[in-house]
Amino acid sequence: MAKYLLASAGGAGFLWLICGLLPVQAHSNLNVSEENLAGNGHRVSYIHKNYLIADNLTEQNLPVDNQQQKIEDLGLENPANSLPQTTPTSNSSPSSDRLAQVTSVSQLSDVQPTDWAFQALQSLVERYGCIAGYPNLTYRGNRALTRYEFAAGLNACLDRINELIATATGDLVTKEDLAALQKLQEQFAAELTTLRGRVDAVEARTAELEANQFSTTTKLNGEAIIAAVGATGGAPDTDDPNIILVNRVRLNLTTSFTGKDLLITGLQAYNFLGGTDGNGSLQESLGLASPLLSSSSARTSFEPQFPGVNVNTLSGVGANSVQLYKLLYIFPVANKLTLFAGTAAETSDAFPAITPFYGEGQESISRFASLNPVLRVSGGTSGTGLASAAGFIYNVSPSLDFRALYGSVNANLPQKSPDEALPGVSTTPLGGGFFSGSSVVAAQLTFKPSRNLDIGLNYANSYHEINILGTGLISSDIGALSGLPAGTPVKLNSVGGTLTWRFSPKIALSGYGAALFVDDSSGDVDASTTFTSWMVGVHFSDLFKSGNNAGVIFGQPLYRSDAGGAAVLGSNRATPYHLEAYYRIKLNDNISITPGGFVLFNPEGDSTNETTTVGILRTTFTF
Image (cartoon, rainbow, N blue to C red; front, side):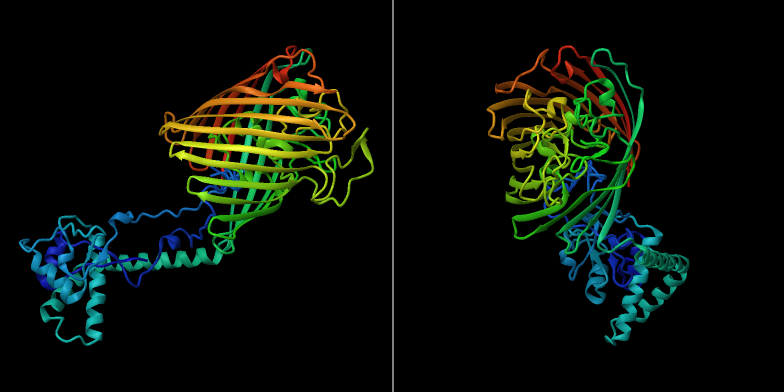
């Protein structure tokens, strides 16, 4: 507990103190830091200013999503995705008002020899060393003080007098001083007793918190999303689905062993359905899902890419069963170089999102608006920690960094299963082994040419043992090379860029563009397809009320714009468009409600599909 140092020398000095002439200062033996007041506030020291680990691991957030997302950028979105940073709160004065001991009255710039209290102040400094000034070397002699502040200062001076007497420092303490001190001690006995009681209470509380804290190295945070989702439209001859109530819960343990490293362990459960054939999903009810794995442009931001199925083995996953969705370790090896590796990770864990619409529990409500499609290639943002990955972050300068990773989807399987789920498709459709089977090499260059402009450039080179994109963004994600069997292996070269321009403190313009080039990798046929996508939107911070955010987004979902060789473009083609709006209402630091909706024109690039509207009321709890 802090003790306030107050200076005095003689009855006149104490009188001037009572008049509010002398400042007080936190001092000596009642020492409780801000960390102690916050419950022995262990702080995780994030490795890089741009880390946000785990998708929410939160603004959002580990998450526990955007989660303070992702450390800022080894991708966590607060909470459930995001890793929020612990900042202890305190009622103490700001640092600019904290007092520092002075050794000479001449150090105080606003105290002049002509001041009527100058000699008393000089005596207090030179005889007792019992006075303090502010960091800017001012004294502020006319500042008012409370009786408790006065009592605290008096207590400090009593300790100083006792120290001088105990160390036999000659006649520094006069009889007049001792008499004045005794009188003041009697007058302020009640305040001094209260002060000591408060010190004892704080010390007892601190001891209790230290004894019962979860861990000295690990922080636990979480995010729970509960949402009502309704939709109309869809494919011809389909009925509007019922309104559904869905949830996703994430718990994240963030551990630092050195203060600079970070181990992220994330658990999650959700009740979205789908499985291998999409049965039970909203997208399947609309008739807009792919025949396998329910990929669709009608998907929400917080829905896993492969709901209800373990895509590694095509085995089912029960509703609200607990899964390990994040296991990632980040550690610095040099001043500008940080490495990371994990057996359950996502591209967004390592790459900054750039766009302010990213935040599965806090910002945009659709999968389309959250991230550039290039980051999602090869299951890069599956929501279930699909890939084992390793990579690095090289901080070239404060305004420029380069990040790259290698990811393998089925690193835990020693070999591909000989059994077939479909003709040419194994029951382990993505292959097996860390250096074989489906894999991706991805990189991002992030730079900030000015404080209001962020730019990210992405490239990904990937190989898939089956005919998919692995983004989960559109139904054509399955059968990327249209006209070729599902078991056709493909290779992808994907490029994209994302830009955010904050043209005012609370308004930002953000957008992205992407192109995915898909080629046959079997050597048996010559086939190629190009997919393109773009998005632009306006993000509003603190709209109408502090903490409330909103977004308006428009763009083109992934669309097969070109095909060559044995690949075909398909029939009933029409350019799809996506229009979205949402408004996040922050009820308090832990609860927010986001009403919003998005409209799909020519959904899935098919002119026969009806204009589709998806409405969402999302409630997010972070803790």
